Length: 217
Ligand code: SF4
Image (cartoon, rainbow, N blue to C red):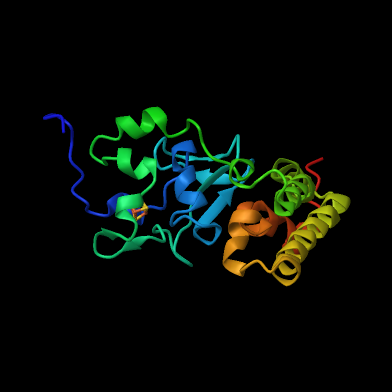
C-alpha cells in the first residue's frame, strides 16, 4: 500500500448514511455474489434523491441501482452495528474507494459506469420487458408534471395521478403472484412505490388538492 494512502478506520459512518450505488465493476457481485435483487434498490430517472457525495437533493437524470437500506431506515442493509460490513470481502467499488475524511476518489468516479436494470437483467428475461413497460407507463418526469398541474387545480391531471398510483400498485401485486418474485425484490425490479419515489404524489392526492386555488384577480 502507498505510504500516503488514507486508511479506512471502519467507523461505519458512511454505511449508516446508506448503501453504495453500483457500477460495472460490481456486476460479478450481482451475478453470483451477495448482491441479489432482494438486496438492491433501483432509483429511477426523475426520482428526487439525496446525493451524499455531491450534497443536496435533486431529481436523478438517469437511473441507478444501489444496495438497499434496512427496512424503515437509512443504513446499508449489510451494515452490522457497531462497525462491521457483512460483505466486507465482496463490498462494491464505491465502498472500496470511499474514505470519508478524503472523499475525492469517490467524488471523481462515483457517477461513472453506473449500473441500471438493463445492465443486470438479460435482454431475453421477460422481467426486463416488464420493467421497461412499467418504467414507460409510470414515467416519473411525466408524473411530476401531472402533480404540479394537480396542485394548480387541474382535476383531469389528478385523476391521471390516481390512475398511475393504482397501476403501480397493481404491478406490485401481480409480480409476486404471477412471476413468483419475492416481495423484497420489488424495489429492484420496479423501484420504490410511486408515492415514495415522488412525494408530490401524496400532496397531489391529498383531499385539499381537490380544491382549486383561489384566483388572485
Ligand atoms: S456494503 Fe458494506 S462497506 Fe458498503 S455501505 Fe454497506 S455495510 Fe458499508
